[in-house]
Each structure stands twice: as structure tokens, then as C-alpha cells.
Image 1 (spheres, one colour):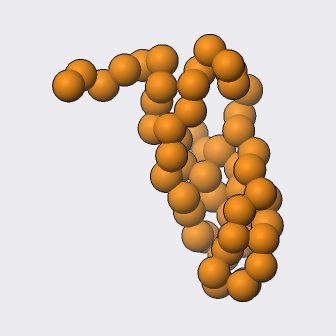
Image 2 (cartoon, helix red, strand yellow; image 1 turned 120 degrees about the vertical axis):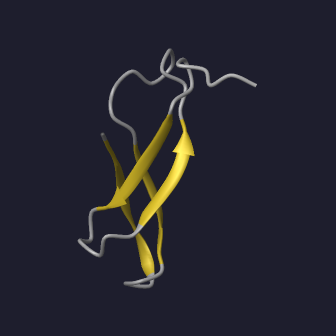
Length: 54
């Protein structure tokens, strides 16, 4: 399988400053801007906002 540039792998970093990251894929056609998701950060043990880093 070849890697598709339409769905690149992105790294989501916690805004709580813990350095915890999630790795996911995103659809560049539907979400051309940087992605932000509210996910669980086990270091601070609560849900925080995760932003895409490049």
C-alpha cells in the first residue's frame, strides 16, 4: 500500500503542556486547516484540547 497524501498522518499535542501526543490521520480535503480535538490527557487526568502540530 502506498501512503496517500490526501490523508496524512498528523500528531496532536496537548495544550495542557504535558507533552502527551496522539497520532491520527486526517482528510486534507475536508479539514485543510489545523485540527483541534478535545481528548483525554492521562498526565493531568482530564479532557483537554489537542492541536495539530507540523
